Image (cartoon, rainbow, N blue to C red; front, side, top):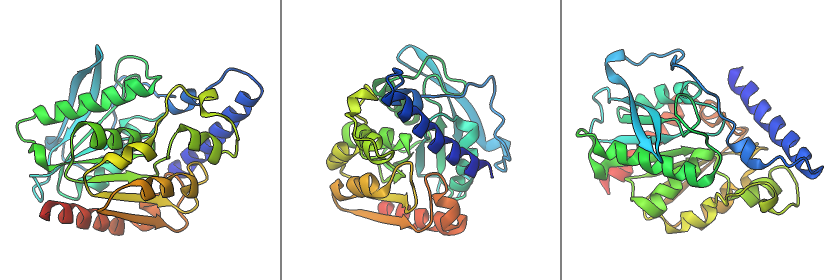
Length: 285
């Protein structure tokens, strides 16, 4: 129910925001993408991961102290580390169910909050800051002695796919790349997803151009997208990212899934199996 409510709220919020932009209110798509929830502490709701494997950490980005949570492997795949870049508005707590699902793969996992999100300092209001935070998170991860640099994979969900694709295209080749529900660009999100024929520059100061950046990746890409995603429609977004990406790549268009319920619609065990196979294939290359 919480997931369905969140999805409905996101869709409704974007539609309302777009309407306000039409009437010249001065609102921007940036306000939707960077609408963070602030926290004094993390609760990690429903946590099933042993406390001994969880470590809250801080690192620096652009003069701000950012917060993240390092989750050590349960022992199955301790040599592989996953950098998880979450979506807009929410913080680590809201994505903790996904952390628990992915931790069952046996990998190390690092999730972090962008500036202004969760417990992280600052105000997140630009693509530049978002990408800087992703790069800082990766640098922190690579500084940990237990992390094998050539065995780090990136997973980006929604807005987080902008970060993951950027890191893979322009900063460091990962072992593998997963993009879930990515949008093609700010223009595609503004025009295609809410049926507005408006220049993207009216709504956002950033390009958020996954479709262009993905051409430069040199790593296996797994793209997951819901067939019924009416926030980030597949035909205008995920399909474009997929077509622009070089091989090797794999597309899973999940029938009946919307923007934020791809794992649940697939079934968590099946979803995890897909990722396990993809990681295994990448590790064997």
